[in-house]
Image 1 (cartoon, helix red, strand yellow):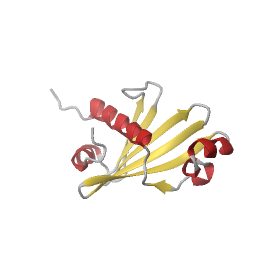
Image 2 (cartoon, rainbow, N blue to C red):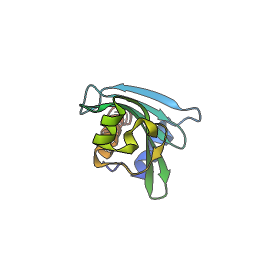
Image 3 (cartoon, rainbow, N blue to C red):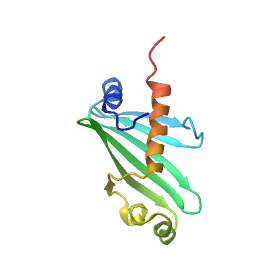
Length: 133
């Protein structure tokens, strides 16, 4: 699945988007039943809140914001909260994941983060975008 496919994103926004947001919670994804994902669908963006534990580093609460942007969807990653030692986080992952970066949007996603977004989107499409039989 191409996570930057504007057409797929626009289908989600057209079907579930609300000006005030339409929140859909998902306990478990297709690849990890321990994931907790919350989708908030607005008319102009899809927000994916994801809690991810990175072993021996910390627990992170991420917000990924997807917006149609011409031919490709733009994606921002925002660290919303971090549980763990800041020194260990900086050493393992760098400043963009440190507690000082909470609330700061980043557009450069790692391959791993792109996989997380893809997994969340696949789960969303599997459960909520199926066409009626």
